[in-house]
Amino acid sequence: MSASVVVEPDAGVWRLRLGQTWEVMRMELSRSRSAWRNLWLPFLAFSPPLIIAGHALQETGCQLEEETLILAAIIQLFYVRFAIFFGCLGIFMRLVGGEVAERTLHYLFLAPVRREVLVLGKFLAGTLTTVVVFGTGIATSVALMYGHFPEGRAFLLDGPGAAHLRAYLLAGALACLGYGAVFLALSLILRNPIVPAIIFLVWEGVNGVLPLWLKRLSVTHHLKPLLPAELPPEGLLALFTVVAEPTAAWVAVTGLLVFTALVLVFACWRIRRLEVSYTSE
Image (cartoon, rainbow, N blue to C red; front, top):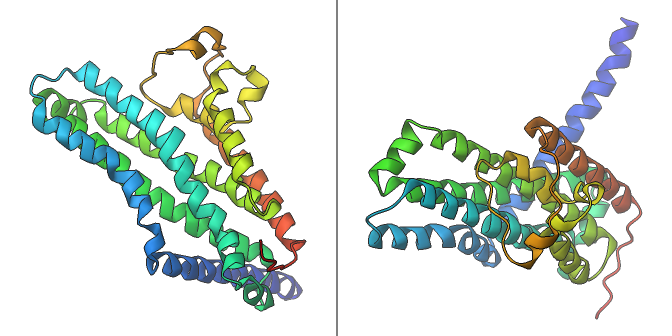
């Protein structure tokens, strides 16, 4: 009897926190759906499928190896390095910064909800938005790239193409998690985090020439073991590329999840000390 008295309040608190997190996530998703400001996100995600569709209508003699390499370049260079990066930059920077710009952040702080719950609910909303939009774009790109010629359809339906699709979707989802957590934390530290975001973009771009211990501090390093097709290094950076030992996929996934969790812990700590100030620039 006494044990139940101790356990039930704790379980009730956890159920309350989970319910509040769910409601904050729903509120943030409803705000995003009702705003025209997010139309640029589908444009980023579905630009490659439009280009691939045009390529499919014009090209007839396609080679499986060539199409696979082109698709790998689209996903690794456009989606992971560019589209998901800037998509998360726009979405996650605005989760708290948008409330400050609209002068509504103090209403959330006055609500009977812990600030950590607000951060986690908003982060889940941003993650769900980016994962769904970019995941759909990646899946559409893969289907169009392999679906317009017989050898590609056989590769996708009866060969390892389905495994490639799963790997690309997992890499895209983890990229949304990693980039999203970093940009959310930056928005809680700096009023104008654009310059640090540019530095972070350059850091991710030159990841190949960094020493191994510095590679581990980037998102793209943890995504490379998941990608089924490797792009050959080209250009000047190829001369300085540091070849590291292959990392097991489960180690890469675990490392990125731990990295995301640590950044979120910092974000929760930071928002508890955040003071509301609507100063004009």
